[in-house]
Length: 308
Image 1 (cartoon, rainbow, N blue to C red):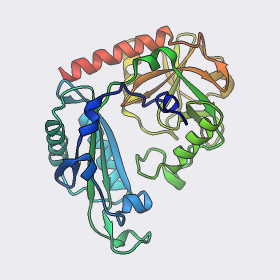
Image 2 (image 1 turned 180 degrees about the vertical axis):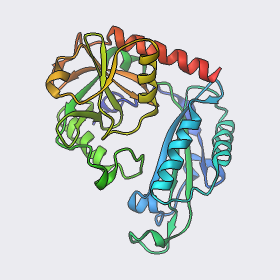
Image 3 (image 1 turned 45 degrees about the vertical axis):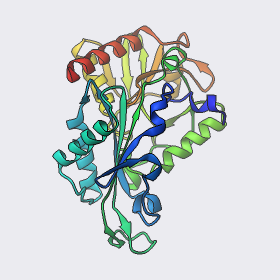
Image 4 (image 1 turned 60 degrees about the vertical axis):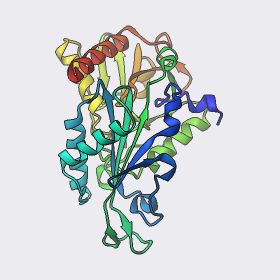
């Protein structure tokens, strides 16, 4: 994969030299990135046993931080993980890391918590007897403006977002191999990201973001049964309702998707990113459409109000 390919993804960001000298939070210490390390016995490294949140900083304030922490604590309860810090402590860790890096805006933080260091290299969670491990990676991160103009290319893959009894897709866990395999499949096919179906064959999500289409003035997204409970997804749905834009959480097929007027994806990092084509089929004009642009503007206004 070329450098150009890497930068043509939903997480493509403008190059910022300040990221070469970042300071990273590791278990209460804030250290230069080259010294930010965890043990090879850490349960996150060894088994993907951990959870995470992506949070953005605007105007010195964390956007929707209460909802992100709600999701983190909910995930921790689901996997029986003691986070080691309360909400105030985690927020303080975020603020301290931003301050150490001189960051106030256009910043993306990845807050990660694992079950900690194991005494033996095996699966049993009771072997994680020194933890948790908390790491915060924070970067100067302005989403690529070029990507909004060109959009991303999706390819439908055979890897599905599974049933909750296997690995609940609503869980923001370190165990992302399902989505990584989907992304690899799409990239091998010449696309940027994967479009994933649910176990019943309905259009669901991409490997990294939630997915929407626009048809005849209506905004559609999946039922939400098999996708990440995205905070940006929820905000887009609420903005549509507030503005009188018809919005539906429903099952829909690839046939309906190929014939959509517009398509876009949502996530904390890129907000709303247009989709130019799916499986070689141009979506609408192949450029950002009027509804996507309207929703982007509404969302930017919401961010401004929230972080004023």
